[in-house]
Image 1 (cartoon, rainbow, N blue to C red):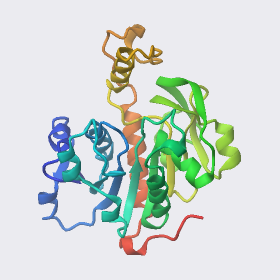
Image 2 (cartoon, rainbow, N blue to C red):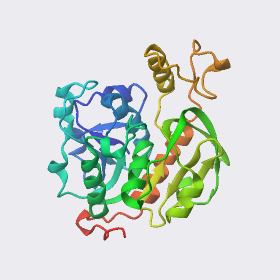
Image 3 (cartoon, one colour):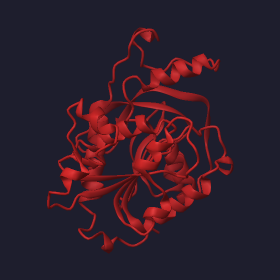
Image 4 (cartoon, one colour):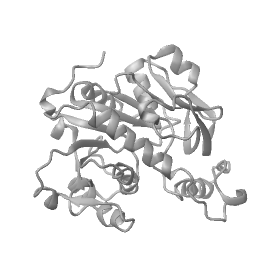
Length: 309
């Protein structure tokens, strides 16, 4: 089944060119089916690029999914046209009385910013508290993981001295867990972050179960036992050239970035890299949608589960 989005969203043509099954709202309205309602809180500056990446992964499922894009505030964006935001995004006040099957919270380029200095930190906290009563399962990605661990588990911000950037090998710790069903024993996934996620901290101060980790990256994938919270510290949604774009951007800005690990062919930034993590990313999102959302969400969203303690 396809993802359902507004007819005019730029991602429609972008994904159709990749043979991704996208159903516009006008066509979906003719079908009698209760689609999953998934809310995406997009915190990335380049919102259109991020939309394409996440919609691609969410489309790899037999389930029909109704997508709603959410912005954190109405401040003017430097990287996304105001018309796009006003047309395709809603504000929290527009949806605060609704319930959703799933929520995806993206990363944000805030690795070196203290939580207290994040201008929309109160809004983030409000949405995460709201999600306890209004969302069946929430998936946090990269910086959103760090924010959620602080808000939900009171874990302080942990920052690496050197940015973690590249494509790293990870070990599947629990291959029979639902979220890792079908994973290889080892798999590749990209990272681009200053945030640190030591496995011992996750085990000591939370009740979350670590499902995949790496000596280089720390905890990669972990989740709550009730399936209502899932955390991925890398960027399985990245395109093949996303890390390259970040590297050349930082190079042009005079930041002297380190070469992303295991990414450019022969470690030559003039050569075009290839994605080696796509199958993992698609399987991760398909598992989350199936086992963490579809299998536990009520048919009538008014019968949402009680608050997570």
